[in-house]
Length: 216
Image (tube, rainbow, N blue to C red; front, top):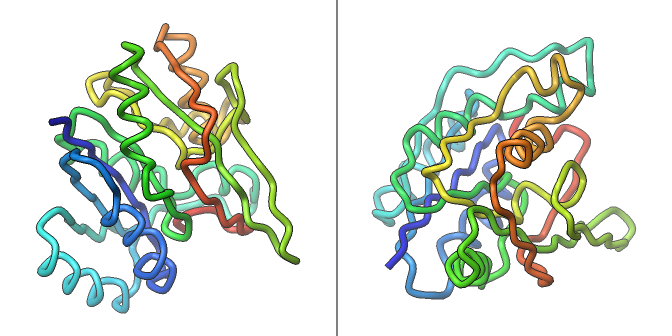
């Protein structure tokens, strides 16, 4: 039975974290063992107190609150590309699963997210599997993401699971030097490194866009 580590960076959003993101991981279908790593980016006491209760109730969940990452406030695009990067990397360093994936603290997985993507990884002998996302925007509008081939803009960060043994981490040089957000830069480096991708033509992730990004 495969073990899957899911990393959720968070910053001052206890509401969506506790009512949307975290339950969507806890309630995944399928036989896989889950490890849920919630990493605070210097988050507030409301989140700390709530997560203490969650950790006590669910042995699959771990929580750390790290010092708040420093962001270039005078460069909005660069800041957006860096949001939660240190928290995400810390989560990857703590992960022990066969596979790893991430979720922003205000988004959610579909109930079969892990089941569908792990099956795609194992049945197709690939390193990285991703699916489609639906973005829920203001005014009741929705927008779809996810297509082949992989690359920057081809899918959302929360729609993917990959082999932890690949050893990749998010890199500050992506937003700061290469002009790519943390996730797009990661996928670009993976493609250049020969990682084998597989696209699942199915919605596995619900995305709730906001101007500040996922964890800061």
